[in-house]
Image (tube, rainbow, N blue to C red):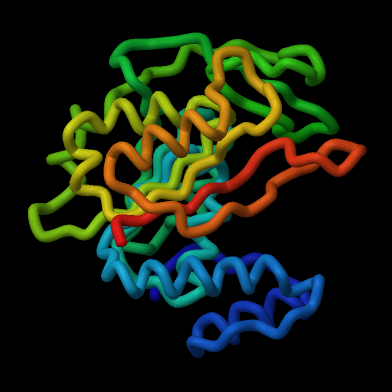
Length: 244
């Protein structure tokens, strides 16, 4: 495994990733729950015999770094359009010959589009092509290059590849999936955010997302709660689906 400078991690993280790398399920402790979730993802990647993960909406690279820490040694293609995050992402990917970084966004159209960035406390709070329903005022609007996944597919994916697609694009995920076109039939697994409550203007309801993917031949494997309202109802899920 080759990667950039490792992050400082706490005791729970060391236990969690050690268990994952050894193929063990981390114990049921609140501080280790996210590592149990990653254990499930690791097992699914192995079951599907995934050779390349498309990391769309890569942000600063933590998701892809987590794949490496859990023992995934296959190829990663990360897509991130924000300059400040690309710099951090490239730092994490530095020295890893199986981790490519692409500095543009993916969507259902090719061209340029306004990209909303909200910063708070000196860091990135929110970023999306869609406007949030309830959030601080937009700090910056960037002009971002957007491509369809099917327009770059053959540059990244080999005929023999087994593909897993992860998209985390703040309400824009359906458009990412639509931009895969006919190549979506070559994807064996998907991990996508899906809104239960209306969080972004123009974002689909989670049932629309699931119906779209099930119509494409995917089966729902797991729903993970990302966030809840103060009253406890679900705001959004991470949805994991696979061709099984």
